[in-house]
Image 1 (spheres, one colour):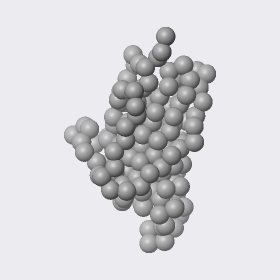
Image 2 (image 1 turned 120 degrees about the vertical axis):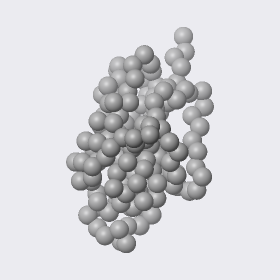
Image 3 (image 1 turned 60 degrees about the vertical axis):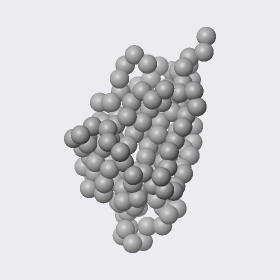
Length: 151
């Protein structure tokens, strides 16, 4: 991709978190730094130029986001709630990013994994953007991977 999407990612995430969670989000002042991700959601944007969106959050962001979106106390949030909310947030981020890319495009359903020391590999894809953000619950990242166009 010739265009960079870091500013658009930042604006999309800020809008989604403000609207859906009532949380202010800012770009991490030191750029892309390690983030302890305990949940990772991936979503594919399929089309002429396939892109994978990876949304990785810390345990605190997952719990805080679920409590805010579901309007329940953080002690009442279940692991299923956390996974559902992270999946929904990644779906919203992917859907908004899809509108910036040349179409026609198709958005997959999100896939969520939970654990410790998680990592994601998108075979044959190149990392083209990585944006680290902060909210009141902690740090999270949005990454975009691009598949090469086959001639």
